[in-house]
Image (tube, rainbow, N blue to C red; front, side, top):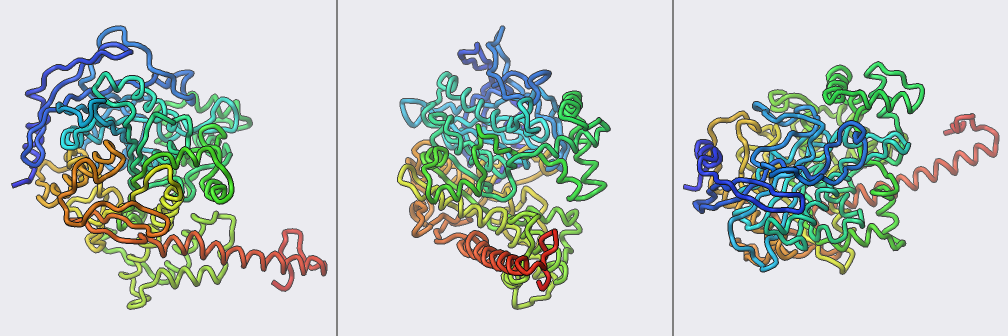
Length: 602
């Protein structure tokens, strides 16, 4: 009886019963609309304000610049439809995409419940950062009416610059990078300055996100100038501890784009002028052409990522983890002052199956032993340790042994499961555990960890039937109360959400909104599950919550993967490389080393 049909959702969100609502802000009057929603037989009213500009349009001379604060409205601003999304290529949508793209895309959407707040200071506020690999996505896809009303919190979603326009850097003062991160920071400042007029409590702000949005959340936790702008964070499947998500320096990517556009690349002036002339469609055209004609290796030439710029990011994740052992680090102190929920889905590595083809190909996917040993294992090693470090034979054998199902070591159907596990370990599992241990090693705040294991009826990503585990992004439906545009996301006009998934959604919304209100997922509303309270995560016992049809608790989530990739293999690598260096010095003393450092006798 709890099923939600698309027809009912259409009736609820067609806004036939919408009425105008107004709020007076420091920037001027904003006009939104009141709408009705239903979730689990409960009827709610929500005020929604869509497409509010939180910064000046980053166009013209503001391209490749930090965002500037939005200017006051000259007349009442009608916030009744979504703003344009940032330039990108389409990725996840399976149905018609009606969003308009524009470089003028720094908009936010605010959802306010028509209920008394839990505290006299106003509603707790939750700001969501969308995923999409820092190359795609929009806050418009995540409609916050149900999370806002069922959780009794204000929900905010935003667009931020992505791709070339969000992260270009050329090692000079004109293009310093990290514009998408600065956009997120500007949105936090806007909320701090204006959310009280919407009934929000600016001192109870939770920043949450998924995938690249989750990675962004953890980046914001490293920027001390965010102090006072948010107090809690929820990272869903992504952290700054993931490999290869920041650059230390380099302008190669900018040069690659200019070359692909047919521009001269003799110097930075020519490259910069070329990129300033790009249409909003040009970066996506170049990126997709590289992907279609040259595969992953060609595509990576056009990937733009955050940079260690000395201002927003002062050091890489590896350097931060090392500094945490001995130094008093300002950004680490701020990071540990934020209350945290960190989550990892059961089979995050399934996200990378899409590189093996379309859905019909994934259903029949088989991985050979030769492919696993000589292609997949070496490539995973390189993603963690860099493409310039050789894979020692002893380390290769260790990894082959680890990612083998010994009940069928050469079975191509079992090996495909090992591919999922290995990708999950290097990108999410081991880094996620390292991230939570780094945070929990403090008394300034509290840490919580979950793993999402529920096998949902309609996975967000293409997931073959043989996997039968929770894929990357599967928790998003429950978090937002299944408030999807099903036609755009799944190309479906008829769908009924299973009753058990709605029950799970209700519990997750309670955990998330509790945390936003109190910094504790258990308070103020107790869970209806028999699992007991969600335990705190500490370095010693590493307890966590398992989110499924029925909740339960566990200990030492992905501890083996963490120990393998963060401790054992680095230690073996150090011994091997020291041994090779000693051997080379020995032969060098005998005059038998070649100019490139290769020694006779090795």
